[in-house]
Image (cartoon, rainbow, N blue to C red; front, side, top):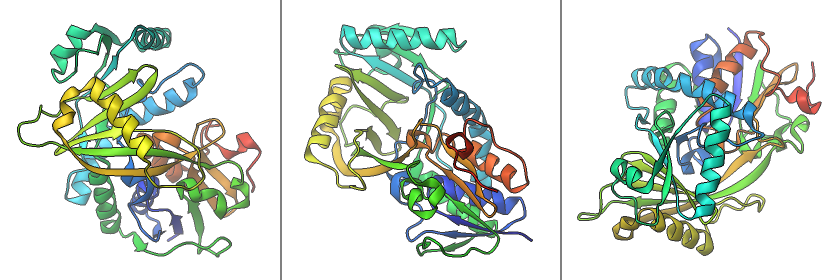
Length: 354
């Protein structure tokens, strides 16, 4: 039996470890705090269409391929773990406030139509028929029923349970750079990956994102059924339903490995979210947190072989949860000797070995 050491216990590391154990490998996962970090903070959107933008057609294709895997992935994971993977099957609406925001969504709709992915354009009244909690500042937008979401914390719990039931040994301690691994090493350490192999130097950087959790209180307007994404005077904001309330996010800034939420970030998120859903003023603010997205130079993941005994799956930026099923499939293929698509291979940066 072949040995695999997975470094990183977020959604990517856990997904890869689970699938590798299913494929017959002897898997050890190393992380000082599995199931935390950016995977714990994330909003959990599975939204390749509403994340699409000109120039990122390759990323859209990867996202759509992974989204197709999600229903079966979640069903199998729930059965293997004995608990829900947290998939939320309702779709997404995208709301715009002023004329500039509506023009930007029109440009997105036109871009998607050119790619053969038409979306439904709606005026404000039509959007409020779908989601009555939307406020009067919403003047129009899009309906994207195929963009889904998942409860990221339920997903992490299910992945760890399924991985351990499949035989994965979880060691709650750090992996030291240069440490020798029995068999193959798979680096899935998110924003911290660059420190673990010289071939990743300069390829993965931390991108800070602040996010809020709001809890529904008795008498407040009900939680929306769908994910609500919005542009408010050019600023993006999203509100993702959870059983007890909403996740609101997310800011984006580059300040190294700083994970403290800021007063300004909380203020800005609440200001814009309340413009879209005025009823959240009656919700409770239950959590403010910040995570570090693992950014790559081209915003596309880095998945492939670094040397004869080291693989990598990182650099997923804002799409780690969306791309988890596809990433795990590609990693299992690598372990069996199959190549990965050129667009994700570290060879595109000249960073691969034999």
